Image (cartoon, rainbow, N blue to C red; front, side):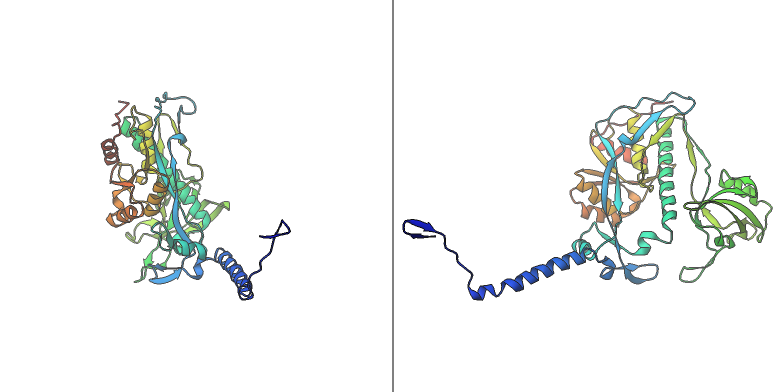
Length: 397
C-alpha cells in the first residue's frame, strides 16, 4: 500500500520475469498429474499385478482383490414362529443386549491405482481370474453360494435345537450337481477323461426326474440306476439356472473305484434339509456361502435360552458348522479379521482348522483384536463363558 495526497492508493506487484516463466510448465505438470491419477483409477490392475497360479505354477494377471467386507448382526435377522398349519408352540425368544456378528468379504475388480495403494496391505489379497471364479460360470457360482448358505442355515438350526434339547431331524434333499466326476487324471492332476454325461450336464444342474421317476433325493436316483449297466442311457429332466427345465439323454458309465457300479458321473451337493418342531427363519438376503454357520448356531442358542451368551457385547464369529457340532474353515480369514477390527469390535471366534499360519496372519492384520480359535460348538460356548458370557442351558427335555 502507498500513501498519495492523504489517500491510500492500492499498488499491484507483478512476479518477476524469471518467476513467471515457471508458471506454464508447473500448470502443465499439475494437469498431467491429474490425468495420470485419473487414468490409473480406470486402467485394470491386470496390466501390472501378477499372482502365482499354483495349479499351473505360473504367474498370471490379477484383476481382482479379496478385501474386508463388513460385520453384520444376526439377531435382528432371526424369526421364530409356528409352522404353517399349526404344530408345536414355539419357544420364547429372549431379548439380548449383545449380538453375534457374521463377517463378509468382497472381491471387487481392481485398478492400477487401487493396486498401488493396497499392494502392501496385509488385508488385501490380489486374485487371478481362476482364484475368483474357478471353473464355474456366474450362474453356477450363484447356485452354489445360495445353496451353501441355505444348507448352513439348516445345519445351524439342527445343531442349535438338538443342543437345546428340542426334536429336530435331517431329511434327504433334492439332487443338485456339485461337479462332474473326472474318470482319469494325468500326471499333472489335469482331467483327461470325463464321463459321457459331461456332454449334457453341468455343475449347478438340478435333476428332477430320471426315467419317469421323480427324484426327491440321491437315493431315488440310485434306485433308478439299479440293474443298469455302463453304456445304458437314461432320460433326465434337468433344471438349469438361467435356462429353465429341459430333457437330456445321459449315457451311464462305471465308477472308477468299482467297475461293477454304474453311475451318471457327478458329485452331488449336500442338500439335506432339517425338519423342526416350529418355524425358524434367518433372513440372509442375497448373502451366500457357508461361513456364517457357527454365528447362526450361537445366535439361536443365545436367543432361545436365558442369559447373555455374548456377555452383552457384540461378538464377531466366522466358521462353518457341521452336523456333529465341529467348526470348519472358511476363506478370507485375514480380510474378515480386518473387517471386524474396522467395525470397532473386540473379539472374533475363528475355526481352529484354519491352521496356525492363517490365524497368525489374521492377528497381524488386526493386532488389537482378540482372536479365539475353536474347533467345536462346545469350545466356542466355553470360550464365550470364559470371556464373561452366561452359560446357556437346555430348555427342552
